[in-house]
Amino acid sequence: MKLRRLTGILLVTLVAGTRMAFATSYPLPPENSRLIGENVSYQVPDDKRPLEDVAAQFKVGLLGMLEANPGTDPWLPKAGTTLTIPTQMLLPDTKREGIVVNLAELRLYYYPQGEDRVIVYPIGIGQLGAITPSMVTSVSQKIPNPTWTPTPNIRKRYAQEGVTLPVTVPAGPENPMGQFAMRLAYGKGHYLIHGTNANFGIGMRVSSGCIRLRPDDIEALFNAVPKGTRVQVINQPVKVAIEPDGKRYIEVHQPLSRNEKDDPQTMRLPLTSDAKKFINSKQSDEVMIKEALERRSGMPIIVSDSEKVSG
Image 1 (cartoon, one colour):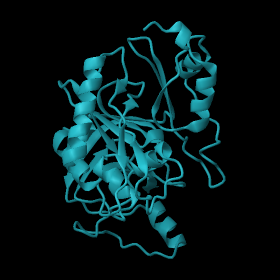
Image 2 (cartoon, helix red, strand yellow; image 1 turned 180 degrees about the horizontal axis):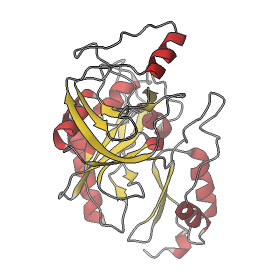
Image 3 (cartoon, helix red, strand yellow; image 1 turned 30 degrees about the horizontal axis):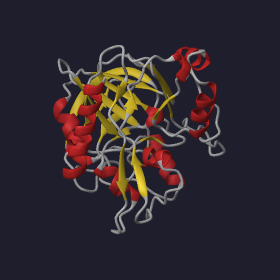
């Protein structure tokens, strides 16, 4: 446990100093463990950068930054403020194979075959009215320099806002799909994992249902993922884990709203049977559980009953 955490600290520290892409790669913990990475602190310099720039520097999503740092101005974080960079997380409670997308936390996990590591990317997902569905599917096609042909529903939604879309947007800097796309076999093939031509929207609900990554992230993922790779899309706003040392963790994200009246900070949280069992266990501290469910920080929180956990 200590060695794994030290590795995570060194990994994030390296990236914080160099801004290299390695911040998204974590040693894969054993099957009886889900905790990876370490959170880091960052003092906002007086450089007038928006929060999205800080999020991109550390390879995290914008809403994840806001969950971890409530009240922060997303356009102009106050200079001198210390932010928590949420680079510690629990792996989703599902099969560790191929690509796993957890919609609620706006993250994509990639488990390279035959490698003892997991690579984590922040993503943008479907907005209200164009929700990205849960699914188990595969990568059916890899498309460099994709064109974009808006579906009838997308064209209709844009038309309601007074925007007339072209029949097809050619490859290039104006293409909202970016430079790389991977089509999913689900349904009629309308859902893709792709890049973007915008410098915002990652870690947010902004797409027409597809899964969107920053340009350098989609390039790395595109080059690494073979055609036919398994893809699972889930919606787990609450993740729990009992680590080998007996410590109990819960990670709570704001659930995805279903309409404009929903408040993700107060909406009812959907819980799996395992999460309910974990929450109701006598080994979990009731007060800390309640605080974590209300706070919804998007970060792993220790909720062990200290009197019932051996050191």
